[in-house]
Image 1 (cartoon, rainbow, N blue to C red):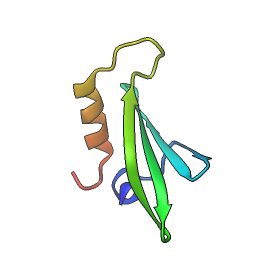
Image 2 (image 1 turned 90 degrees about the vertical axis):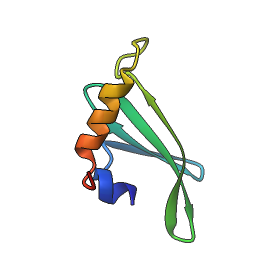
Image 3 (image 1 turned 45 degrees about the vertical axis):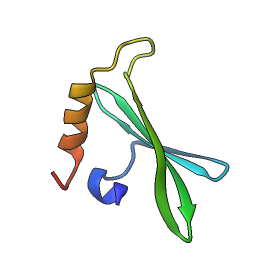
Length: 73
């Protein structure tokens, strides 16, 4: 479902059983943490942050960026 709505992640990594899908925008970086159960991945957590370390995130701008990438919106 995540891929169908936001497309391919800009960056992925696997640590143990957890997969991280990262989506990068000018306004923020959003990480989704997924676990695979019976061949289906489910989001177990997520986090967002400013694209520059130490900067404040603009949550409204980040939500707009996510909505702009969301194929369902």
